[in-house]
Image (tube, rainbow, N blue to C red; front, side):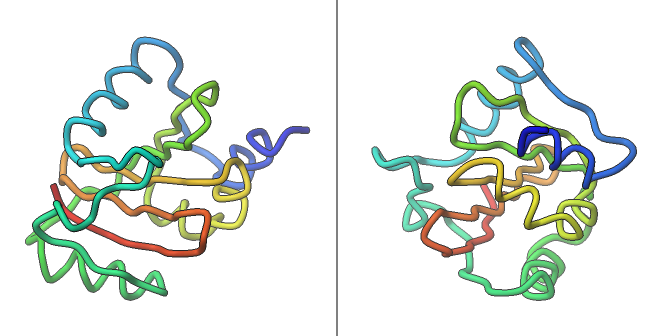
Length: 131
């Protein structure tokens, strides 16, 4: 079983796997929502509202402070271009975070409808921000 398969299994029910057209649409929305550096990390200094965090509670606190309401439906995007994008609930991602981040070096959790992203960079740095 691959790390992707383990991740999907750990996320449980209501996981949608996006390939090709749907994947490209979400990826385009993501790339148009946030500026990226040449090395693949979001250029946070160009993002109007962001915070470095260490816990899920800090992520929730940031989202609650900055957004009146926010969508729990998110897309998990990895830096490896051959991987699909996964749509699931934010709480499920938090519950299975070790399996989610094991799939590839860098991981982004993106909500196009609410305009937020959580970046889990391979050096252990975690930031949350708004487009």
